[in-house]
Length: 255
Image (tube, rainbow, N blue to C red; front, top):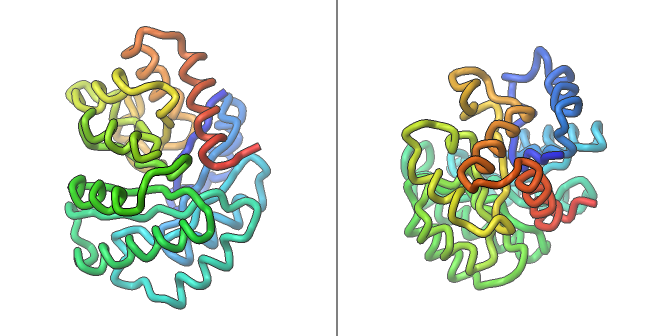
Protein backbone atom coordinates (compact mmCIF):
# COMPACT_ATOMS: atom_id res chain seq x y z
CA UNK A 1 0.00 0.00 0.00
CA UNK A 2 1.03 3.59 -0.60
CA UNK A 3 -0.49 7.01 -0.04
CA UNK A 4 0.02 9.89 -2.43
CA UNK A 5 0.18 12.72 0.10
CA UNK A 6 -0.01 15.55 -2.44
CA UNK A 7 -1.78 15.72 -5.81
CA UNK A 8 -3.88 18.29 -7.64
CA UNK A 9 -6.69 16.10 -8.94
CA UNK A 10 -9.01 19.01 -9.70
CA UNK A 11 -6.72 20.44 -12.40
CA UNK A 12 -7.88 20.43 -15.99
CA UNK A 13 -5.07 18.02 -16.91
CA UNK A 14 -7.33 15.26 -15.51
CA UNK A 15 -10.66 16.42 -16.93
CA UNK A 16 -10.75 13.88 -19.76
CA UNK A 17 -9.84 10.75 -17.77
CA UNK A 18 -9.96 11.52 -14.04
CA UNK A 19 -11.97 8.41 -13.17
CA UNK A 20 -9.54 6.19 -15.09
CA UNK A 21 -6.56 7.82 -13.33
CA UNK A 22 -8.15 7.09 -9.97
CA UNK A 23 -9.00 3.53 -10.94
CA UNK A 24 -5.39 2.91 -12.04
CA UNK A 25 -4.20 4.24 -8.69
CA UNK A 26 -6.51 1.95 -6.71
CA UNK A 27 -5.62 -1.11 -8.79
CA UNK A 28 -1.92 -0.27 -8.32
CA UNK A 29 -2.09 -0.24 -4.53
CA UNK A 30 -2.59 3.45 -3.79
CA UNK A 31 -4.89 3.34 -0.77
CA UNK A 32 -5.44 7.08 -0.26
CA UNK A 33 -4.78 10.37 -2.04
CA UNK A 34 -4.73 13.86 -0.55
CA UNK A 35 -5.80 16.38 -3.18
CA UNK A 36 -4.68 19.94 -2.59
CA UNK A 37 -6.33 23.33 -3.06
CA UNK A 38 -4.45 26.37 -4.29
CA UNK A 39 -7.22 29.00 -4.09
CA UNK A 40 -10.91 29.18 -3.17
CA UNK A 41 -12.22 27.53 -6.34
CA UNK A 42 -9.69 24.69 -6.40
CA UNK A 43 -10.13 24.09 -2.67
CA UNK A 44 -13.85 23.73 -3.24
CA UNK A 45 -13.21 21.36 -6.16
CA UNK A 46 -10.76 19.33 -4.05
CA UNK A 47 -13.36 18.97 -1.32
CA UNK A 48 -15.98 17.89 -3.89
CA UNK A 49 -13.65 15.11 -5.04
CA UNK A 50 -13.05 14.04 -1.46
CA UNK A 51 -16.79 13.88 -0.86
CA UNK A 52 -17.25 11.76 -3.99
CA UNK A 53 -14.50 9.20 -3.35
CA UNK A 54 -14.02 7.55 0.02
CA UNK A 55 -10.25 7.12 -0.47
CA UNK A 56 -9.62 10.80 -1.29
CA UNK A 57 -9.05 13.52 1.30
CA UNK A 58 -8.57 17.23 0.70
CA UNK A 59 -6.59 20.25 1.81
CA UNK A 60 -7.71 23.85 1.42
CA UNK A 61 -5.69 27.03 1.17
CA UNK A 62 -4.12 29.77 -0.95
CA UNK A 63 -0.92 29.00 -2.82
CA UNK A 64 1.75 31.74 -2.77
CA UNK A 65 1.27 32.16 -6.53
CA UNK A 66 -2.27 33.35 -5.75
CA UNK A 67 -1.47 35.48 -2.72
CA UNK A 68 -2.18 38.78 -4.53
CA UNK A 69 -5.80 37.75 -5.16
CA UNK A 70 -6.40 36.38 -1.67
CA UNK A 71 -8.59 38.42 0.69
CA UNK A 72 -10.15 38.06 4.16
CA UNK A 73 -13.52 37.06 2.70
CA UNK A 74 -11.96 34.14 0.79
CA UNK A 75 -10.10 33.01 3.89
CA UNK A 76 -13.35 33.13 5.89
CA UNK A 77 -15.01 30.87 3.31
CA UNK A 78 -12.10 28.44 3.49
CA UNK A 79 -12.31 28.41 7.28
CA UNK A 80 -15.98 27.44 7.01
CA UNK A 81 -15.06 24.59 4.64
CA UNK A 82 -12.44 23.38 7.13
CA UNK A 83 -15.14 21.94 9.39
CA UNK A 84 -15.86 19.23 6.80
CA UNK A 85 -14.67 15.78 7.83
CA UNK A 86 -12.80 15.16 4.56
CA UNK A 87 -10.65 18.30 5.00
CA UNK A 88 -7.44 17.11 6.67
CA UNK A 89 -5.03 20.04 6.25
CA UNK A 90 -4.64 23.71 5.39
CA UNK A 91 -2.57 24.16 2.27
CA UNK A 92 -0.93 24.57 -0.04
CA UNK A 93 0.51 27.71 1.50
CA UNK A 94 3.98 29.19 1.71
CA UNK A 95 6.50 31.27 -0.21
CA UNK A 96 7.76 31.12 -3.79
CA UNK A 97 10.54 33.54 -4.68
CA UNK A 98 11.29 31.75 -7.96
CA UNK A 99 8.21 32.42 -10.08
CA UNK A 100 7.24 35.75 -8.57
CA UNK A 101 3.57 35.48 -9.56
CA UNK A 102 2.64 37.39 -6.39
CA UNK A 103 4.60 40.06 -4.55
CA UNK A 104 6.88 38.86 -1.75
CA UNK A 105 5.19 41.20 0.73
CA UNK A 106 1.74 39.81 -0.07
CA UNK A 107 3.05 36.25 0.01
CA UNK A 108 4.50 36.81 3.49
CA UNK A 109 1.31 38.41 4.75
CA UNK A 110 -0.92 35.62 3.46
CA UNK A 111 1.45 32.90 4.62
CA UNK A 112 1.44 34.24 8.18
CA UNK A 113 -2.32 34.74 8.21
CA UNK A 114 -2.99 31.21 6.97
CA UNK A 115 -0.58 29.71 9.49
CA UNK A 116 -2.53 31.50 12.21
CA UNK A 117 -5.89 30.26 10.89
CA UNK A 118 -4.62 26.68 10.61
CA UNK A 119 -3.31 26.87 14.17
CA UNK A 120 -6.65 28.15 15.44
CA UNK A 121 -8.45 25.34 13.59
CA UNK A 122 -5.96 22.71 14.80
CA UNK A 123 -5.15 21.69 11.22
CA UNK A 124 -1.70 20.65 9.99
CA UNK A 125 -0.27 22.79 7.19
CA UNK A 126 1.08 21.86 3.76
CA UNK A 127 3.92 24.20 2.92
CA UNK A 128 5.30 25.26 -0.45
CA UNK A 129 8.89 26.54 -0.23
CA UNK A 130 10.69 27.45 -3.42
CA UNK A 131 13.89 29.47 -3.11
CA UNK A 132 12.56 30.87 0.17
CA UNK A 133 14.20 28.50 2.65
CA UNK A 134 15.48 31.16 5.04
CA UNK A 135 12.18 33.03 5.35
CA UNK A 136 10.11 29.82 5.63
CA UNK A 137 12.32 28.46 8.40
CA UNK A 138 12.32 31.78 10.26
CA UNK A 139 8.53 32.02 10.13
CA UNK A 140 7.98 28.41 11.19
CA UNK A 141 10.37 28.86 14.11
CA UNK A 142 8.26 31.83 15.15
CA UNK A 143 5.16 29.59 15.09
CA UNK A 144 6.85 27.29 17.60
CA UNK A 145 7.47 23.58 17.97
CA UNK A 146 4.82 20.91 18.20
CA UNK A 147 3.61 17.55 16.99
CA UNK A 148 1.92 17.09 13.62
CA UNK A 149 2.65 20.70 12.65
CA UNK A 150 2.57 19.91 8.95
CA UNK A 151 4.68 18.92 5.98
CA UNK A 152 7.12 20.66 3.69
CA UNK A 153 5.83 19.46 0.34
CA UNK A 154 8.08 18.76 -2.63
CA UNK A 155 11.13 19.37 -0.45
CA UNK A 156 13.99 21.13 -2.25
CA UNK A 157 16.40 21.99 0.57
CA UNK A 158 19.41 20.18 2.01
CA UNK A 159 19.66 17.76 4.93
CA UNK A 160 20.49 20.52 7.43
CA UNK A 161 17.27 22.35 6.57
CA UNK A 162 15.30 19.10 6.67
CA UNK A 163 16.52 18.26 10.18
CA UNK A 164 15.80 21.81 11.37
CA UNK A 165 12.22 21.49 10.15
CA UNK A 166 11.81 18.01 11.63
CA UNK A 167 12.96 19.45 14.97
CA UNK A 168 10.05 21.91 14.79
CA UNK A 169 7.55 19.10 14.19
CA UNK A 170 7.27 18.98 10.38
CA UNK A 171 7.43 16.05 8.02
CA UNK A 172 9.46 16.15 4.81
CA UNK A 173 7.73 15.08 1.60
CA UNK A 174 9.79 13.49 -1.17
CA UNK A 175 8.58 14.01 -4.75
CA UNK A 176 9.42 12.27 -8.01
CA UNK A 177 12.49 14.47 -8.48
CA UNK A 178 14.34 11.99 -6.23
CA UNK A 179 14.43 9.64 -9.25
CA UNK A 180 16.25 12.17 -11.45
CA UNK A 181 19.85 11.21 -12.15
CA UNK A 182 21.42 14.56 -11.20
CA UNK A 183 19.18 15.29 -8.19
CA UNK A 184 21.91 14.54 -5.67
CA UNK A 185 20.61 16.82 -2.90
CA UNK A 186 17.13 15.29 -2.64
CA UNK A 187 18.68 11.82 -2.92
CA UNK A 188 20.85 12.65 0.10
CA UNK A 189 17.79 13.87 2.00
CA UNK A 190 15.78 10.75 1.15
CA UNK A 191 18.64 8.50 2.25
CA UNK A 192 19.50 10.36 5.46
CA UNK A 193 16.29 11.33 7.26
CA UNK A 194 14.53 9.08 9.75
CA UNK A 195 11.94 7.16 7.76
CA UNK A 196 9.40 8.12 10.43
CA UNK A 197 9.64 11.73 9.19
CA UNK A 198 9.11 11.15 5.44
CA UNK A 199 6.03 11.33 3.23
CA UNK A 200 5.90 10.55 -0.48
CA UNK A 201 3.99 12.50 -3.10
CA UNK A 202 3.49 13.01 -6.81
CA UNK A 203 2.48 16.69 -6.99
CA UNK A 204 0.46 15.38 -9.95
CA UNK A 205 0.11 16.50 -12.70
CA UNK A 206 3.63 17.93 -12.25
CA UNK A 207 7.10 16.40 -11.74
CA UNK A 208 6.57 12.91 -13.09
CA UNK A 209 9.32 10.53 -11.92
CA UNK A 210 11.56 8.44 -14.09
CA UNK A 211 10.52 6.40 -16.09
CA UNK A 212 7.53 8.71 -16.74
CA UNK A 213 9.46 11.99 -16.80
CA UNK A 214 8.10 14.43 -19.35
CA UNK A 215 4.60 12.97 -19.16
CA UNK A 216 1.65 13.97 -17.03
CA UNK A 217 2.16 12.75 -13.49
CA UNK A 218 -0.58 10.79 -11.70
CA UNK A 219 -0.99 9.23 -8.24
CA UNK A 220 0.01 5.71 -9.31
CA UNK A 221 3.50 7.00 -10.14
CA UNK A 222 4.27 7.65 -6.46
CA UNK A 223 5.32 3.99 -6.56
CA UNK A 224 8.47 4.94 -8.49
CA UNK A 225 9.36 7.51 -5.85
CA UNK A 226 8.98 4.99 -3.04
CA UNK A 227 11.04 2.45 -4.98
CA UNK A 228 13.89 4.94 -5.34
CA UNK A 229 13.81 5.81 -1.64
CA UNK A 230 14.02 2.09 -0.81
CA UNK A 231 16.97 1.71 -3.18
CA UNK A 232 18.80 4.70 -1.71
CA UNK A 233 18.31 3.41 1.83
CA UNK A 234 19.05 -0.23 1.03
CA UNK A 235 15.73 -1.44 2.43
CA UNK A 236 12.64 -3.19 1.09
CA UNK A 237 9.98 -1.27 -0.82
CA UNK A 238 7.32 -2.59 1.58
CA UNK A 239 9.07 -0.92 4.51
CA UNK A 240 9.01 2.45 2.76
CA UNK A 241 5.38 1.97 1.72
CA UNK A 242 4.19 0.99 5.19
CA UNK A 243 6.08 3.67 7.12
CA UNK A 244 5.28 6.58 4.78
CA UNK A 245 1.62 5.55 4.76
CA UNK A 246 1.60 5.41 8.55
CA UNK A 247 3.25 8.84 8.67
CA UNK A 248 0.66 10.33 6.31
CA UNK A 249 -2.24 8.90 8.30
CA UNK A 250 -0.73 10.19 11.53
CA UNK A 251 -0.16 13.70 10.20
CA UNK A 252 -3.55 14.09 8.54
CA UNK A 253 -5.65 12.05 10.96
CA UNK A 254 -6.73 9.62 8.23
CA UNK A 255 -8.43 6.53 9.70
